[in-house]
Length: 438
Image 1: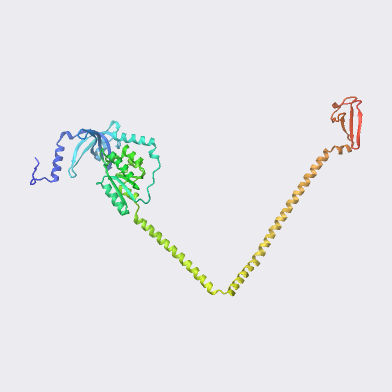
Image 2: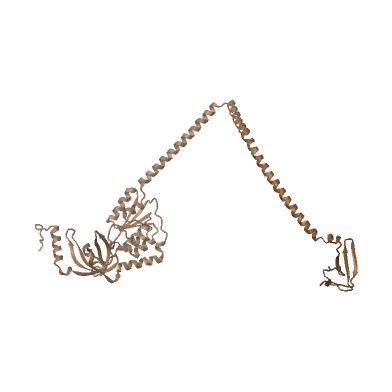
C-alpha cells in the first residue's frame, strides 16, 4: 500500500517504478494484439515510432472522440516483425506489450510484429482523402490567391490564447513592428470543438477589418492537427475576404488549411514574419534611400553652384569687345572647318554624282538600244505581214461579189463575179473555169 501522509510521501521515481511494476505484472497488457489507424510515423536510429488512433463515441461526453496509443518497434525487432513500409492512414494489427517509460512517466506499446488489416485505409485518412477530392473538384486548390499586404497595420490571429503559437506570433510581430495592432481570437485548436471554433474565429476576424489573418497552432502530432483538415475550416478560409496565412504545427506534412489559405508557412514565427513588415529594415531602407537622395542633391547643388560661379565670372569678366573677339574666334573656327571639310564633302558629292550620272547614262543607252532592237524586229515582222507590200510584188487580193475574201478554190463557182484588188485599182472578172490542186 502507498502512504497517504506527508511524512511518508513517495518520490516521483518511486511512483513511476511502482506503476511500471504493476503494468509488467498485468497479464492483460503483455503479448496482446491491438488494432487501429497508423499516425505520426517516424524513424530514429533505426527504431520505428508511431501511434494507433481510433475515433469512438463517448458515453461520458456524448460525442465522438479520438483515442490514441503510442507505439515503438526497436530496430532489432523490425527485421522480423515488419514486412512492409508503414505509412500514416494505414489500418494495422500490432502484437506487443504495454510498457512504461519510468523517467518520463509515459506508457507505450512495444511492438514485436505488425500486420496489415484487410481494410488498409483508416477512417481519418479516408475522410481527408474524400474531402481533398471534393475540394479539388470544386476548384478551390486552383483558385488565384489573395496577395499578402506589403505593409500591414493590423493582423488577426485565430489560435489558442494560451498556446505557444500566439506567444511566438506576438513576440515576432512586436519585434518587427512595435506599433502593429494585433487582434487575437481565442479558439480551440484540438478536440471535437476545434473545427467550429476555428471557423468562428476566422469569420469574426474577417468582419473585424484586419489587414491579414493568421490561422495557427503550435507543434503537435498529426493527430493533433486533424481540426485543420476539416470542411468547416476549409470553408471558412475559402470564404474569407481577408488574406489568410496558415501556419499549423511544425511538420512538413501540409494540412488542407495550408492548401486553401492564401499563404502557407511552416511555423507561427514564419507566419508573423510574412504578415508583419520589419520596421527596422524599412527604416534602414529609407535611411539608405535618404542618404542616396542627399548625396544626389549635394552633387546637383555643387553642379548648380559651379555653373552659377562660372556664369558670374563670365558676366563680370567678358566685355563687349571680348564678346566680339570670342565671336570672331568662333567664326574663324567655323570658317576653318568649312574650308577644310566642305570642299572635301563637295568633291566627294560631285564624284558620287558623276558616278551615278555615268551609270544612269549607260543604263539609258542600254535601254534605248534594247528598245530599238525590239522595234526593228517588230517592224520587220509587221512588214512581212503587210498585204500591200506583197501586192507590189504582183500578188492580188480576191473577194467575191459580196466583198468576202476568197481563200480557196472551194470558195468560188463557175460564172461567179469576183473582184481582184491590185495596188493601183480593182479588176472585176467572171470565173469561167477552176482547177483545184491535188
